[in-house]
Image 1 (cartoon, helix red, strand yellow):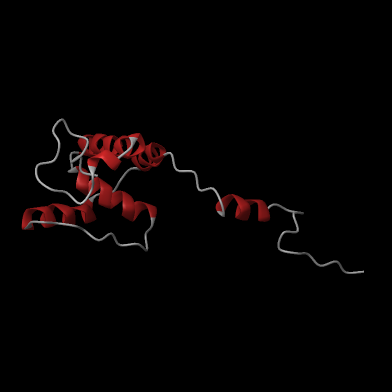
Image 2 (cartoon, rainbow, N blue to C red):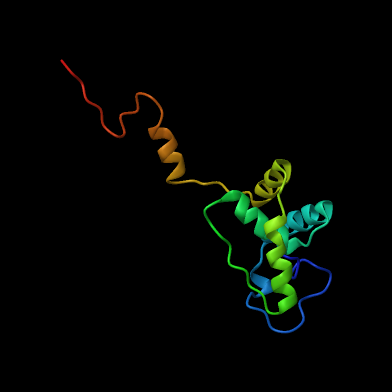
Length: 122
């Protein structure tokens, strides 16, 4: 998420991710993260971690640092509060559609569907 694969130069040395497996959606999300980071004046890694925290308050992201400097940078994400507009832009970049079962559950909540069953009293 920090722009390693979306920058002008390919990453130096071996990586855990094969750059050839990244699609346009992956690059769009990375660009959005980098843009928000630039606007907030913080590193992209902090935006990515803050975004995870903003989406799921009970989920605590696991930082992946290969140096003390990266760890310190990532830990700085605890002080980053993303504006609602930034979260919305990041979410829009994912193009994620929940699909099944979310759509099915939403239909079940509609009155009169009877999906969960219903009782009739005579």
